[in-house]
Image (tube, rainbow, N blue to C red; front, side):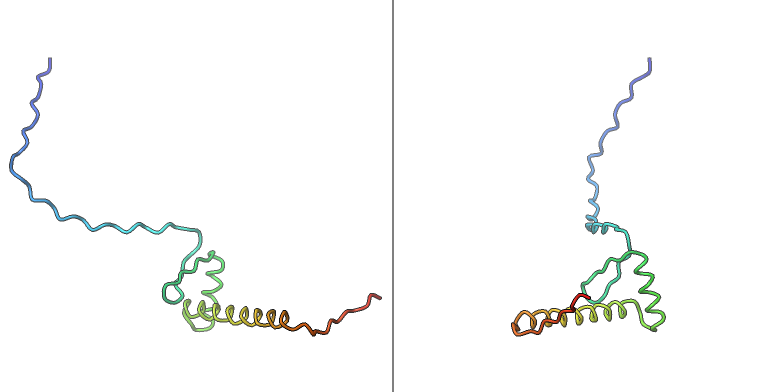
Length: 104
C-alpha cells in the first residue's frame, strides 16, 4: 500500500493582497469590412471593395481617407436635402403643368 500524504499546512501569515486589476474593456465585435473614423464620434463600416475604392480616390485626390469620406457625406447630404426641398415644393404647389407624350 502507498503511504498517504498529509495535506500541506496552510500558513497562518497573511499575504499582502495584490492591487485589483483594472477592468478590461470588452473587445469590439469584428464585423466584415473595415471601420474608418470620419469626424468625431462617427464610425463607418464598409466592405473591403468600397474601402479600396475610397482609398484609391483619396490617393488620386491627394487627401486622406477621412477627408474623402467627409466630402462624400457632405455631397450626399446636400443632394438629398435639395431633393427633399424639391419634392416638398412640388407637393405644396397644386398648379403644375403636366406634360404627356402621345402614343404614336
